[in-house]
Amino acid sequence: MYIYTCEPNLEAMLSCIYDAWTSKRGHKNIKLMLEPVEQLTLFDEYIHVDADSEKVEKVMDAVNMKISPWFYRQLAYSSMAYEEDVLDNMYHCMILGFHHGPDALGMVQYADIMRHNEIRKRLGNEVNRFQEVLRFHQVGEVYIAHFEPKSRIAIALGPIFEDRMPSENFVIVDDIHKEAVVHHKDAHFYMYKLSDEELARLLQTEEENDSYTDMWKVFFDTIAIKERTNKKCQDNLFPMWARKHAVEMN
Image 1 (cartoon, rainbow, N blue to C red):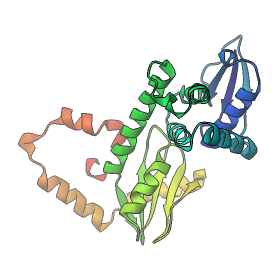
Image 2: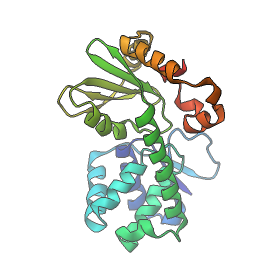
Image 3: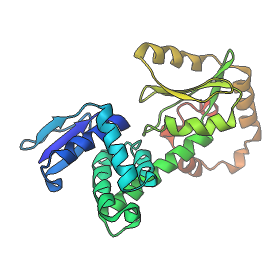
């Protein structure tokens, strides 16, 4: 088995798909994995692939023109997921797409399509959860929110909060994947890759409580009805792993 590996970002993933596809080693003899690979197997050959803009463009053009732009957007969205098999699933969904066209993603008789739907559903749930529970701190004229998602969903939250807060300066920081959504007042957001030093400095902002944070804590405590507390229901709707940066829980 030939195992192609790459970093967990869309550019590297598309480059990895390109190299695997053009290797002509046979789809059944190829597997794609995201790095880091936790456990190497003895008799497989591992091939690392770096991001390459030319390869990315070729894959994008092929999928957009020979399948459909909608099909490409579905795969690009699923690429944010944290599951180990997401890259291999994208590859096999693409094989089905070139064979059956854009309707391939609706052919649930294929295990790869069923798995794709599972990944998208869980990813969508994670995006929905954090668009509801993300908490901002005011630091000067900038609002900063920290969160620790399982998947790289910061870019999916960008347009949501740009629409909610178009005239505010804000930064949404993904502490796990070290990337941030940066939005300037009345402008479009952009993604920024954080260095260790920049992330360390931004983490300090959580220690600087502002008046809005204090008011939210008071409001949260005031409206709570002790007799109706349902911790099990709360844990289901707001799991422990997602609430680390929720100020009302600290």
